[in-house]
Image (cartoon, rainbow, N blue to C red; front, side, top):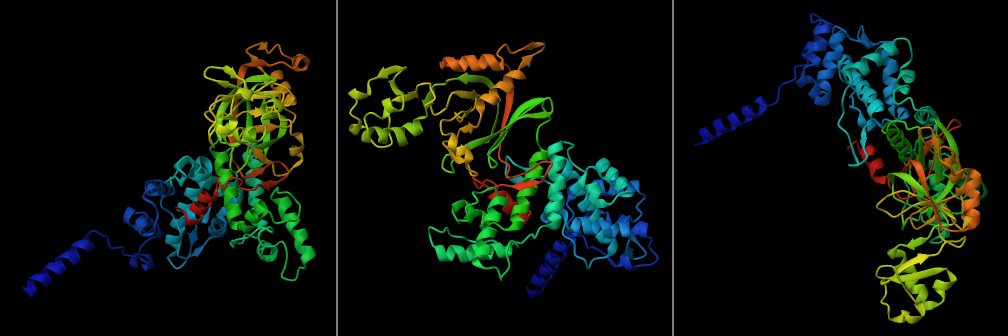
Length: 526
């Protein structure tokens, strides 16, 4: 019986081993085997898998080397060529191109040089594909599988023969001006910045002044803003500089937003730049006319005929009432709009206000309705009997300069009941950190935006008859008047924490913490 169990055990052992191909590596040291033959053996599927190269790359790699007759491309006389060393240096700092190191195949420097070459070429293939197609699935919040573009890789390789790898790789991706600015500035940022990996848990000054200052100081040292020898005055000045760099209020105080920004590592910050670049790679084809809103930078841009025609500061939703990302089309501009108050605001704000002040509706130029637009006299309602968090009426604020939407509104269909509109609270535009609304986007100088939109509104050869002067005339009447656009304007409400222009790159606060999970994914590579 014991013999039987021994035989059975040996049978299982060898059966299991048969399922795993044995990788013979002694051929790499054999002088009688040509380099061409060695490359061919390395390119076998089981060998590439042994090198941790994904199967999605196998066929393309063999095709690429076949096109070069299986000759080594980076190795000569048992050393890396100058070209090979250059590629190694470029890939060692792949974050400069917006590709995190975790995206690439990790390489043990102790393996044979020919094996290293194939890994390097695999990583070059991954970078080339990712830079031209994007590698983040933003809808699923995950990374896309690696892939290879034979023609693209071959073209990149040919270009690298006459130019440095950094330059060739940097020029991959969309030709869009915004992307080019971002790619160039981000490359320089990563090439020169101090990318610390230190994260902190920083309390606000209100919670604990002494602990907050100490934690803030440690974070500023880690981020290379100050040294260990810096005094308290220099530390406060450095905090203001940090706030300026992150588009926060430069008050030198450690509030909630500053504490959150300081807690983030510079490495995580650079990964947000990589996320921003990938968003740009995956933008839809260029349109001749559109509005683009970026929530974290509190900005609205109107483009027409391939150029920026109008730029506006905006106010967006609070963290508790976040402005949603969306894609739609603006079809109407409304002069002196009514505001139908969302039921959530009516329940949470108007109901309690009426219990405290029966004149609240009259003071705020509001009317209430029941059923199908049947107006209700608020004096006939016993507001104290209305239960908490309920409001059985609809509320409509009448048009006027007092209206929460201001005197002009831009309408676009969306499931969130948000718009772009004017506001009576114009003083808020002077704030750097403009997160105050219930979700809508309040626009500074919205009449100027309306005028330029009407100027470029046309269908075929017919232009919109409403001119800048006629819009002023309509507004002077101070009555509700909707203006339908002849050619609706696409609007993209986006969330991009890192942006760039001709002058430089700008890192904005991750207002709604939307990129936290993606940063973690990029750090882990899965």
